[in-house]
Structure formats: structure tokens, C-alpha cells
Length: 429
Image (cartoon, rainbow, N blue to C red; front, side, top):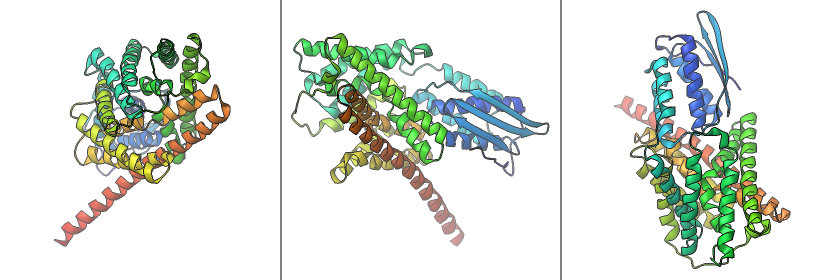
């Protein structure tokens, strides 16, 4: 997996190798905290090492570890260190990518870079605790508008989104509870939904359970795992897929636990209240509301909301259009085929936020993890239906991962050819 990189023609003055190693490791860990592909993390770190005059470098990245080797006048220096699997907020992601761009051209001192990375880690959420909870309520209601916009379901989404937002707020800065937190949140949501049904409130459990838990759904992790497998990163891809599947199992276990606690059985988790009147405008309003909720809950950087909404709307529109011509399992391919190059275009051509900030919400909206959650839940009561559902999830993840891969390649191809055409046109003059 490791490769070598040669230094550029005019490298920056070589800094202290030990400091540079520490900076590269911590920057690599920050990139992994942004959900970046391990192959791209390796490429970025090698590029930065070259910018600081290292004749050659070796980098191997995994989802929870970074291995870096640098050569200086005294020989080879190596660091092998673990990386905490802690996801960053969207505003922190923007700061990390901005720092990385400066480092790739050698414009930041590694010691100063270390201080900036530490400041990014300590950075407070832009909208504070209130924005964290209120944003979760808004995005939950937005997803409910997309799935089933009945008044009862929307009210249930608001209440449950508020409760889950409070639970997540309690866990901010506490990595110890990160593993059991999805189980606790799912159990609370399930118990409240079935208590409401017991008291005569006509809530649809199949549609009410997913929206408040959407931020726990490992849709991005599962898709990224498939994407890394497509790049040939067998270890990273497999580990992400296993971690994502375990997250789904924990959520399903929590849902079943809440149902049993209230006197129901797991089979009731897949009960549907029936049909409802179709509201054509509701899903589109839901996308707008969902984007606004993501902006507040994940503390998106300034001036990023219009770009996020644009990517969400176009990805959702293309997915809906594609589902009319192809199967719903394949529609995610076309959604990400648009979202991925659009995110890069916004970042590099319009100086907008990093692509990760704009197209990660599209992952959450397409919700491949939601399909997986319902499939795993069905396994608790109907193994045949659950296995069929899991096969559907594999199709969905593959199509979204392939759309992301093709979309990124399409943007790179267009950028290179447009640049070549411009150079040719200038020479012709």
C-alpha cells in the first residue's frame, strides 16, 4: 500500500524532522476524523512531506492508525501511532482542509500547524448547545417530511429529535459512552414510540423510528467502506464495513430492547400504519429543512448553507428522477454522481467550503444506513425478509460508492482537460 514521493523542484526549507513527523501524524488523524479515504490521506501526507523538502516519504493509513516514515540527512525517521476514531464537526473539517492546503505548499510552519490542530480540536461549536439540540430537531423533522409527512409523524419526529439531541449533547466530549450511546438512544426512541401507540396515538413505527436516529446511522461509513474496497484498500474497507454493520446491529438491538420493555415484540418494529395522502411538495421542503438542521447541528462553517442546500437538492432531484427510470437501489449512483463533482467544483472553482462539508450531508439524506437498519430489525422477526433487505443494502451501498468514485474521476478528468484546452488556447494566441 505504501508508496514513495519525490520532492518538488523548489521545496520549502526542511524543518525539524521530529516536529514534521508529529505534524503529519496529527494532520493525518484529523483527516481521518473528517471521514476521508485512507488512500487520499496517504497521498495528502506524502505531498505535504515533499513540500517540506523530504526526499522521499512513506505513508500507510488505516481508519484508526497512521504509519509515517521520512528520510533526512541523518537517516530514516518513523512514527507508528494510533488515531482516535473521533469524527469532527463540519466547521472543524473546514479548518482541517484549509490547514492541509497551506501545508501542501509549505506555507505553514509545522510547529505552528501543531498549535492550529490543537486549537481546532478545542474549538467550540458555532451555535453552542442550543444549536446542537435545535439543529437535531430540525433535521429530524426534515427527514420525516421526506419519508412520511403526516402531522402525527412530524410531531413525533420533533419530540424524539429533541430527546435524542439531548442524549447526544450529554455525550459531547465523552468518548467512553460512544459505543453504548446508539443502543441507549434507540431503546429510548423505541420505548416512547410504542408507549405512544399503546395510548392510542396513531404513530407509524416503521417511519417514526428512523428520523431521530439518522445521525447514528452509518450510511457514510458503509459507503466509504465500499469505496475503499473499490480502491483496493482491503483492510480499511473491510474494517469500515464491519464497524458499520456492528453499528446497525447495536441500533437494532436498542430498538428491540425498547419494544420489549413496553410489552411489544420485535415483530412490531416493522408494522406499518398503512397508506397516507401523497403531498408532492413535502419531500422538497423536507430537503431544505434537513439541510438547515445539518447546518446547525453539525456546526457547519460560515457561508456554507447555500452550497449545502444546492448539493442536497440536486442530489435528491437526480435520485428521484433516476428512480423513475431505474430501480431505487441504483438511484443512489446517479445522486452521488452529481453530488461528488459538484462538491469539488464548489470547493476549487468557487472557493466554497471543502467538498466533504457539502456532500457528506447527501450521504445522510440518501440514508443507505436507514435501509440497513430496517433490514437488520426485520432479522429479529423475519430472517428471510431481513436477509433480502441486507442484500438490497449492499446494492444501495455499492451504487452510492460507485457514484462517488465515478463522480470524483469525472471532476478530475474535466478539470485536467479544461486546463489543457485553456493552455492550448493561450499558446495559440
